[in-house]
Image 1: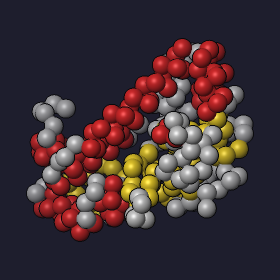
Image 2: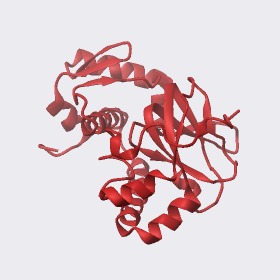
Image 3: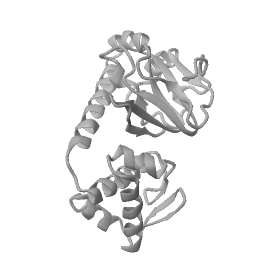
Image 4: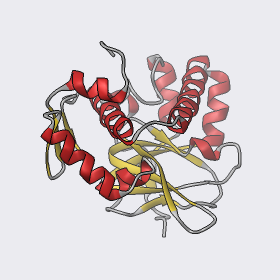
Length: 241
């Protein structure tokens, strides 16, 4: 079951005080506009591992920004099979795909102990009409969601998929001030395989091969990229990307 009492108000940590502000919804807002946004931000108490923020088919009322930890969004197909749509790191938003249908089309689940900030969408929409900078940022985030979905739809080999996934994580962690060569791979191998539409055995085999080829090293959840350039070439990235 999704927790019904996790999101509380007011926010424990104001957007202006949060280290993730340069990545999240407040990007581009001045101090006055930031103060207005803070009035509609609600901070959550921690979610435990595998605890849901919301479930598919629940009525839509909020979008969420990851405050700490990692969340995954999951959809269930007509045959009851689970498909992981994405993994969401601190400063990233989820729940945007529910705006049009007015109901959540996925379930959002915590990976390890994690927390979010909730934003009531009706209040956000009203505020965005008064703050052009907030409206631009909201449109930008929606466009990013569409771009990510389109990128996942492109056909790639298994090697390219996994190499691209690792590089994307590297870039996202670097944006958050962390190392881009040492990654906390909190996602279980089976979840990575599911997200990439691959067999878990294939992902395990490729990780082993990448290690044998000197591209990376893995110790449990600690992944170190040893040869970034070779990994980029494997993923099909142009030199320098």
